[in-house]
Length: 258
Image (cartoon, rainbow, N blue to C red; front, side):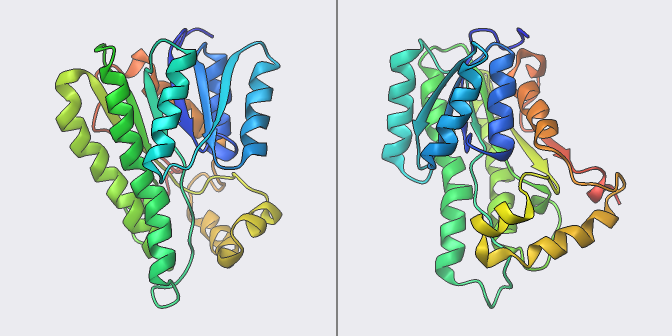
């Protein structure tokens, strides 16, 4: 419970799913966790859960696609803690539509959150970590769609492929400063019940059948869990991964090993 003692870590999309699991695990390991997301109720719920265990957390409302929102998160964080050690760019959107059904506006909206949001997190995270000149870690959440194609997922594939190579380019650029940049590539992860998914992504409900049919293709014969991805996040923001940068960690139960 001390691998991240006194480190301050920003986690975007921290109100639910992988983000919430990561916030709770990082706090348990001793970090000061900055929980950010747009949905106030979810962000506060994650914060309260952590604080109830006498651990350190602060919720800040955040739209990852807006530069001024990133600037506010950095400023607010530094009002409460002396430095920022890591940023986990986890927030993202979802789309399950054919190329013909996916409007340009829908495509741009997903790119704006999932790719542009990661770029802004990388940009402002780097600026914040440079302030103390001790190096740090930036984690970029991509997916297996950065490695393989899948029908009706052109927008996600474009965003996640961009995140993967953005992380590698940043790793080359920032390596001399000991700022590590790595990407995580989950496969199918059990982050929502069917009803929650329908509520959050009403235009993509057809993907529920696609996901259930895909489980049979996974050697482990199940979806992954948010807590399992959170463990990879913990590793990448800790000093245990001090010589890792530009790396891709795939967490998919063997889906793309075939």
